[in-house]
Length: 367
Image 1 (spheres, rainbow, N blue to C red):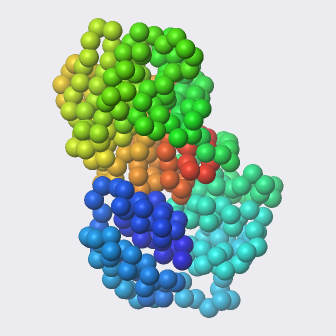
Image 2: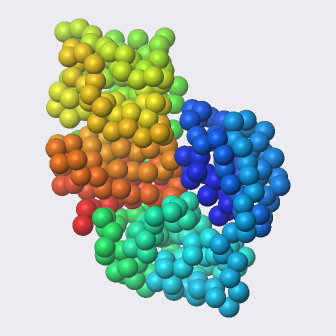
Image 3: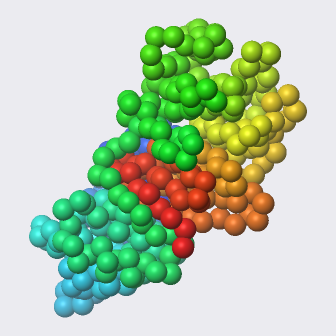
């Protein structure tokens, strides 16, 4: 019943692959989701899933007609042919892969890993091919990667590298990727002197080595009693966010702070003196410490889960699984949906982008 769970998760703005993950995401996230979800009458496990969704509250479940994949078995696409599965009805493909345990060279694994993005309305064969290429396991048969890359030629991204491992929090220093040692870390940041700061899962500040700069020691002492929810660095300033929606800029010259979000600050990034903050309220704001309120640069009805700012671009990841590379000057947006939940992004000076999901780390370059 993966296709049904993915369809419901897309409608509710969360990422989930099983009924249990769907309910967990709904209970943990802010209460901004559609009031009504229509499920196909022939969906496997419909009564149980409908009952669970109703129990969550504020979700009215209705039963629609049969799913649009009730075609005759003979119309099933060849499941080892990447061009065929990218062009076919994605719900039909999903049900076929669920029913057939053969690996099809790694194509089945990639589809079931990234399926929530693949079944989403508005996807094209090219964007499905890009998503599948990013989700291919390391042991996939060699023919699949060039075939999918050719099919994805019209997509806004090309896959430069894939690592089958969950990365920790990410940032970039001197053009190189910096990754938190602990995969549970909420954020990682680098000061101008090279000091690497990590925000752990409890909202406390950690540094590598024993001797921390005076400012870092002071911030760490503050967060020991007032945990942070987000972290970044700008020059020699340490930036934090909290669960009340405030952003704090700590410097040796003093503290600047502003109440910018309704609810928790979920992500911070900095480019020069400009700070970007994202929150549970679904907004991304640009703020200069000491300059008052923030200016909205992006807004969607889903929480922000990660940010990273490059010299000219801003990467934003949202709780519904969408990743965007935004150019604040031209307002151009390059989207990408990997399928699994995204927990970190990092943009490089050359415009390439690293996306860390719960299953892999993908490096993309713009086409």
